[in-house]
Image 1 (cartoon, rainbow, N blue to C red):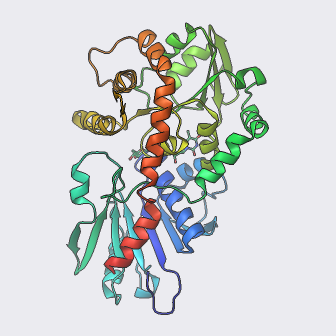
Image 2 (image 1 turned 120 degrees about the vertical axis):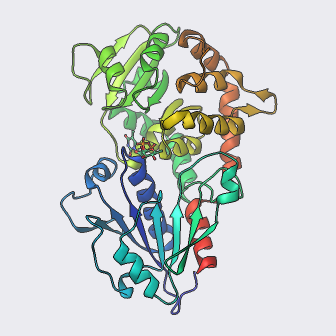
Image 3 (image 1 turned 30 degrees about the horizontal axis):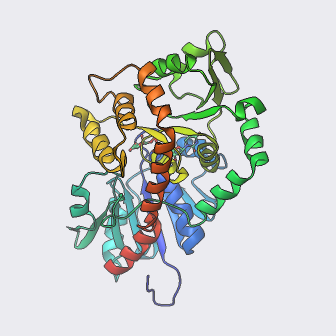
Length: 389
Ligand code: TRH
């Protein structure tokens, strides 16, 4: 972005935590990358620090202002602040259409030039996104632009750090490091060579049915689930002990291990170390795609089953290869999300999925390459901000 004295731009991200970890997860990932790779002076305004602390344990939940990985983190408490033009960043991002403070907008309007003002939207594979990405919208005498992440060249792409592949390949090439990482969660050497599945989903996923199916398979399955995820099904499987981090139970072919909720970078390592990843929401869904391993996505529930439309839009892009639709993957993905009224039981869906694992793996790797070609969201966003200012 061209600035008078060639200084890197400053950028403010406003994040309201609606629920869970995806809102802050995405904003934190973006903030870290913008600072670490592009030298941008980032201020991350976030209204809820305890959620932030779960994915970034160094966060002080009582601090008004703190530094984390070179990013200034400000506790966003109210809408009433008074700001001067000097307080305003060169690029202002409101995440998921959160309302940024009126005083901040008033000061933005006094800046010359006005800051680049972007509304960073949610990820969906639906086709209309291409038509809405980068659209301008006049506001308070300024222009706000919509910026959509996405799966095609006509969108902003997906968040991906420049060194991500290098880190993943180094980790996966080091069997000792990988076993030591898994060992931190109690995974034994014998379990390291079993089929390893990470589990992150919303409470509505048919987890108990999947556990029942896994108990009956011929080869051992080790399921690694962060504490609190699918709590009822996990507690039901664990039995009398509390389903807290460190708890585990083996029944039939399935060993279930409850993990602590790990920092964001360790969550990547978990995805890289597992053979299949069950992910959810937006950010873990994208990380599973960069991991390039087979995955099932549990989509965030929306009213009137709008999420089923979004799920199908993604599967239409993803669940096929040169030989056509990957039926086992499609069926399992729909059933996992309650989107198929005639779904087969998991005792049939899982073996079908496993039988196709080589094909599904190849598709995951292909897709990763395809997504790479669209650049990365942070770089795309900076380039766009520079054009609009
Ligand atoms: O937590 P999510 O369900 O988040 C969101 C929110 O619900 C949001 O409101 C909604 O808009 C969005 O989904 C679609 O799922 P998500 O997006 O995968 O975010 C989880 C974050 O937590 C992600 O950054 C990875 C991180 N994480 C860890 O750091 N450690 C862990 O142990 C786990 C399981 C996740």
